[in-house]
Figure 1 (spheres, rainbow, N blue to C red):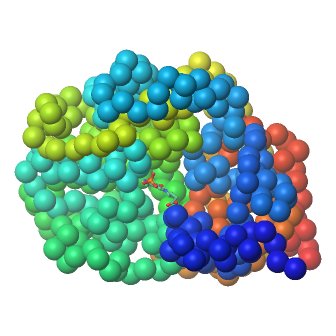
Figure 2 (figure 1 turned 180 degrees about the vertical axis):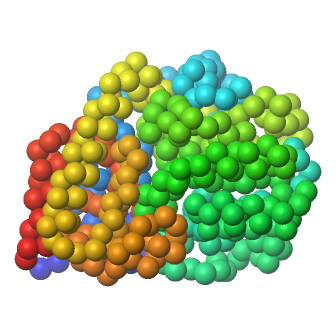
Length: 426
Ligand code: KE4
């Protein structure tokens, strides 16, 4: 007897490459059939067979308030009745930009786009246009979307599928992409010295989330900030995951460090396609039509997407207690897993910052991609499937971060910890 997900997956593969519209959904590294979801509410998703899961992916970050959050869905429905896309400026886009500026530090001007990829590729083009330089540095295991220049030693699905060089990304494009290990300031300093006056930007996930969750070691980001100031390099914080999640002001606020440009996605759209990039006016004013760095999008600032994002951000801004609640739940999960894994006497590391957390079955600290790749990820895959069978939905890869939503309650966390305990005592 086949499950509905198995039937749907077989049918999907007839019309969609790999049966999915984004590779990380395909369960390729953990094995098995991807679960086809039918609906979601609060902290729970229901699959095509009617099975319910406690959700620790939350659409890979966006659903910070939980699924189908009433005020957000109502705002979307009401706005849709007024028209879905005009291709002309609207007041709501101004309100969205003003709200972002009131929450995120250090943003004078912000441009809306429709994905994190668009935000990151636009920020890189802007940094290159502003400095007149071509090279940029990214970090091994960090993922900034699928624009060609970023698909060099990238994280997320590129790491999950161990794709060393992505076909179609030309040598010409990747020649200007320099890479360094995350959390290694000395290596970065050397890289900058070897490419003196040729580097337009350093782009970094201030808290890495695409090789599991890897926070910066103390002093690391401060060192990068100082290096960029000294060398005239544009520092881009890719806050697609951390933005509006770690704090209202994201990692800039949480870690107390200002970038020159910041990119956003995920939470900013409240579950609809929204990305954004912003920063100091001195740089942002080079973006067309103000300047000549061209960037555009038919659905940029789309009214429905703006309404979903605006409503979500407004709720986060007006209810700062949500961040405390997320911290309480996340540390409760952290502590519970720590107790279970310690008792299980299996090597492990739990990395966490705020409501971003990951478990690595590693004998040593996980501070960069090589550490994450060296962990016992076969054991992770078994752990993933055991919890999935128990109705607990983790990201289907050891190279991803778990995201908590404000809809989770202690009972959900207790169920998760209990399932982990049973996995290690089976
Ligand atoms: P999107 O183009 O997928 O909206 O954003 C790209 C992106 C940029 N920067 C960071 C730090 C990101 O994490 C992402 C996207 N993250 C992945 C999950 N690791 C999205 C899931 C997917 O690819 O389907």
